[in-house]
Length: 214
Image 1: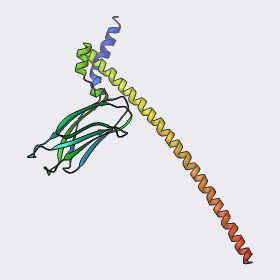
Image 2: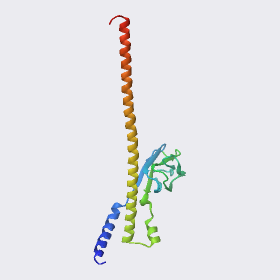
Image 3: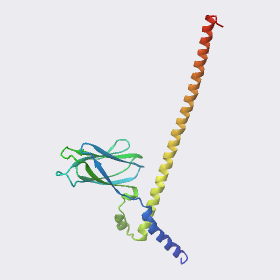
Image 4: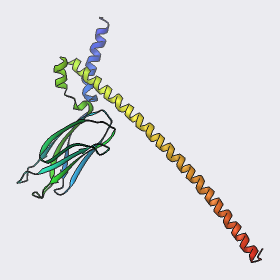
């Protein structure tokens, strides 16, 4: 036990300093929406991933506070969140299928002539977890909590690598099918050219024979 203590202490120290680097960084996104337009944000997310987002309309120059309509859809067009005439809100869901998820913000009304600024805080996966609640529920803190975060980060990375591998396999199958179709198309094009050339030669031969030129 005494021999393993320095190793455990070193591992704990490394985890304490490395976990913040390995954890996904979640930064707010600023959107400028035209007063008569729509602005969308998309992200490719795999299935069974928790998504949490907060949005807030920022207004410093408008005499009347602007409002927006918000719509969040899945890769297959299923409506996940919708809000009308709002200045702030939150949406959360667990993805059911892999693909591109879309969040669109549309300016409402024509009472403002300037662009609308929106602060969007979009979190996915391990970044969406409430670690304070987890620490209180499981009664862990310090290095043990950091190890818990590291474990979650490793699982998230592993799942993402599996997702990328499956996606690469699907793309390889599509590429092989495309190459096969192109090869068959080339063969058919060559065969058609040969047949057409043969027919042209046969026609010219018969034509010259009728004209008694050969």
